[in-house]
Image (cartoon, each protein chain N blue to C red):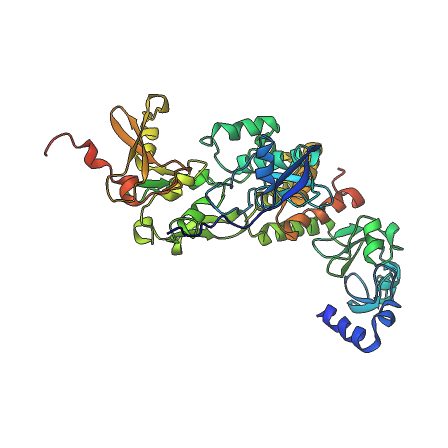
Amino acid sequence: MASPVFIGQPRRMVPVSIDGHDLQVMEGMTILDACRQLRIDTPTLCNLETLTPVNVCRVCVVEVEGSRVLVPSCSRKVEAGMKIHTDSERVQHSRRLVLELLASSVDMSLCAPEVHGWMSRYGAQPQRFGSAAATVAQPVKVDNDLYVRDYSRCILCYKCVEACGVDAQNTFAIGVAGRGFDAHISTEFTVALPESACVYCGNCIGVCPTGALMFKSEHDMRQAGTWDEEKQKVTETVCPYCGVGCMLELHVQDNTIVKVTSPLDHSVTSGHLCVKGRFGFQFVQRRGRD
Amino acid sequence: METLVNVLDILVDGGAAFAATGTAESTGTRLFCLSGHVRGPGVYEVPMGTPLRALIELGGGLREGRTLSAILLGGAAGSFVTGGQLDVPLSFEGTRAIGATLGSGAVMVLDDTADIEGILLRIARFFRHESCGQCVPCRVGTKRQEEILHRLLIDRKTSNRDADVALLADIAQAMRDASICGLGQTAASAIQSAVIQLKVLNG
C-alpha cells in the first residue's frame, strides 16, 4: 500500500541582491548559501555544513544595507529585498582583522591552504601586533594513545564542542571554559581525557580545521619528520565492525594505516564515526599470528 | 527599572502628557548618574534634551579653582566629550549628532587633576576582562587593544606611535563592525573618542 511521502514545507523564492546581482533564492537559505550559489568564495572558519552555525569566527561577515553592523553570512537567513555586499571596504577590513587577530595569537600553520589564500587575499599581516603580542602557545596534551590536543593551534571555532554535543555524538565530554582571551576548550574540571566522559569517537578530530586535534599516529610521525601526505594513499572501504555501513577512508603511508576519516557528505556518517571505525584498525596490520 | 517607572506615568497621565516632556524624538525624563569631579555627585532626573552644562550645574559644578578636562558620557562603552561640547542636549538624537551616546546615563566629569591615561588603561582592562571570549574580534581585539595602549602610554620605548594609533583604530573598526554583541561593538568607543576628541595619543 502506498504511504504518504513527506516532501517538506513549500518554500517560496525571495529576491535578494548580492554585489549588484539580482537573484531569487530559496526562503530559509543563509546568505552564505546564496553567496555559494553565485560562486562567491566566502571565507569561513567555524562553519561546517554538518554542524549548527555558531557564528563566532566572524570571518564570513558581509554588509547588508540598513544594518548598523556587519552580519555573519553563515547564520543570517536571506530576507526579501536584502541588498548584500560581500567585498566592500568594511567587509574586507573586518575579514582582514579577524584573520590577523587569530594568526597573531594562534599557530595556524596546519590550517587548510584556502585559509592561507584568504590571508593573502585580504592582506593579513599578523606580525603588525608586535612580537610581544600574547598567544595561546602551550605544550601539546598527550594523555592517551589515540589522539593528542594541541591547543596552541586552537582558534575556538567550537566545532569539536558541537560534534561532541548535540550535533553528532551527544557525549558532552568537552566544552568552552574560561572567558575572554583565556577561553579554551576543556574537559570537565580539566581532567585528562581518560578520566573524562570522552568515548574516543574522534569526531572532534574529524571537524577540527586547524590540526589542534590530531591522531596520535599523525602527531608522532610529524614529530619524527616522517609525515608525508604526498606518499599517502586513501582507500575507501566500509567499516567491518557492525551493520550500519559507515564509509571509511583509510589514509595509508608505507603500507600502514596512519589515519581514518569518513567523508562529510556520506549519507550514513556525515563524517562521523565511532571509536571502532575511527581507531580500531590495528588488526588489519597484524602481519603474523604473534 | 527606569523604563518600568516610566510606564506608570504613561498609564496614569497618558502618552501625550508623557511626551510633552523632553524633545520630539526623546520623550520624558532620564536618570543621569553624575559622578567624578563635581561638588554634588548623584542620580539626577532631568527632562530629555537638557544641556549637559545644565546637568553639571545641577550637580554643583566643578570644585573651586579646577578646570574641566573631559566628560565620559554613557559609561565605559560611551565616549569622551570636551568642554567645547557642553551645550549638547542630553537626548538620543542630540548626542548622536556629536558622535556620542547617552548609553547607560552615566556622566563622569573629569577635571584637570584626573589621570586620563590611567582611565583609558582602566577601560581597556575592563573590556579585556569582561569579554566572554566567544567571537574573535572581541576576544583577541580587546586583548590587543590593551597591549597596544599599554605600550603607547607606559612602555613608550617599545611603541611606534603612529603605527600603534593606526592599529588601535583598525581594531576598533573590526570590533565595532564584526563583534557579536554590544560589548565588543562598543569596547573601543571610549578609547577612540579619547584619541580623536582629547588628542591623548598625539605625543
